Length: 385
Ligand code: SF4
Image (cartoon, rainbow, N blue to C red; front, side, top):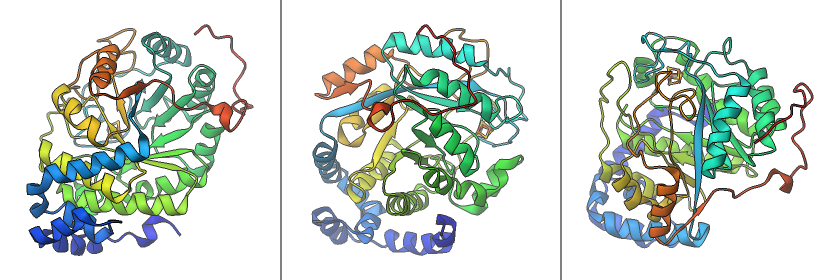
């Protein structure tokens, strides 16, 4: 059984109706529930709960400290390629946009990684548009392998693969895969995905199942906030995360909150999400799923990040560049979107300390589960990180 077999948008709409009718008394009951149920979650994301943001934040923060202590993991993306065969209306890499396209060679990715290593990072996210002819899986596998001895945590955010593709990345040392559904509403999905393989809503929806079945240690979910009504996406994300936790119980699930930012092509989000709404969503998810990882990106402003991180977030990017070569040859390629937090990684780490939390550059070592990445096709290459 896949998530596709149990997920029904019309059921989500019915749940959304229930949520919309929540009374203040129901919100209060949900806030004091010993073990909050899905009905409590519906109450906590409701319009009525918008007036209860403070007690909701307090509850979320208590749970975060109990489950995760005082640590916040730091990571940085490396954009491998901004080539893409898809036409996502909201993205600067949309194949219809006139942008400067670059695909890094494995050695160029290593150069980017060296720059991040010097900043302190041991946790990186390889990002690529959907262009297997430019950035083929074999090259991504080799790149991950080359990075794996120096970076204990490597994740990827790339085009969807078959299960065996994820398994080959896992053998090369990749521990996590992030794949955003963008919107769980199939009609909106069709409206914003205008061309390319990504138009296939069902294939994308089944991707986290293929990642879990391949034995990946981490799966990252997310909806692109601003495409559709956020409460619909919130309910869908919660259902998806709960399903994956139950089905792939050895895999860690995390959720990101990408809000649409300015990008080439000038897309205007039709359903903008305010800071308070995004906070309500993150707090309610923390209360419903206490052990889910919550990830915040540099898409958000420093003030918002510093305010919300101590309440419920467990990982954050820092010093991000969203174009290939951004750390070593800035300005050569077009970026995917503009970031809002341009502080250096060191400044973000200091800000985390000022919150009374501990920034963590490394929280995992592959040696805990396997002494070496197991790869046969990548050649041994001398590296000098
Ligand atoms: S969102 Fe991803 S798949 Fe869509 S155009 Fe951008 S890079 Fe390509």
